[in-house]
Image (cartoon, rainbow, N blue to C red; front, side, top):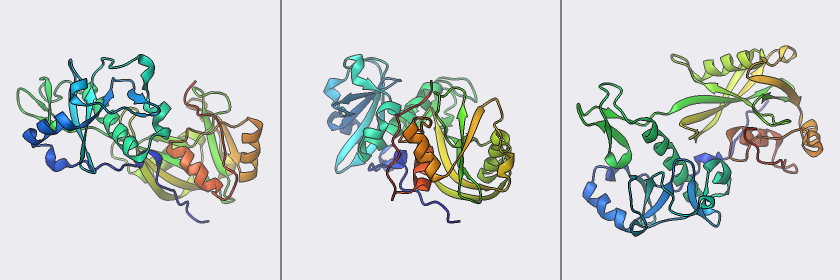
Length: 303
């Protein structure tokens, strides 16, 4: 059985050079801010225009907020303005979940970076070592406490996501109780302390659907800033498909699919697939095959 080959994952697409060497050059970036293209994230969504990011200039911005340098591309510098204030009508803002799959590579890379770093800044106001207030440093790439100068870096939580298969190349999908009816997806979970990715795959599959993993193959990764995860994708071949059962807590239903039964379920409306920009959907589509009629279902998240 061949290991899946994934295309470039949706949220791993980026055309931006983060230009980390500029983060300590406050004079250069201070001047760059005046001419830069700036995106606004208000803590919930991004300011859009016509389905794309709306780029602002420094003269468009006033009030309290945080400037974060995101990088450069083709001689343009890009910044994030993170502020809860609205710079347009509420309907002009959309979440990354809702609009991410529509954005081109440049804008998507900016938005993913922006949301991840904004979430971290919002959740990290104080130093974990001494309790002092933290201020932005390195143009928003780090935070430093005002008392002891302890330096803090953005936190990323590693998680695995796994396409579970049997020896006949069927895939097993599960449904969480918080999802809409007929919504099924692959299995996932956070890596625990002292655990490898492969160990996490084996544990999560055993916990959620009660089967044993015989083989594990790495497929790819992409950021998942909801709020601060890195999704690491694997394919797992199980040895005992007859023992598959939902745990009854997180996973309430499971279904086996071959390609024909999946196509039929989608056409009948008894299967809703994960969102287009998710790793889960990329794995399912890669398994299903690009030589077949694409599987089209509504974009569904939680209930």
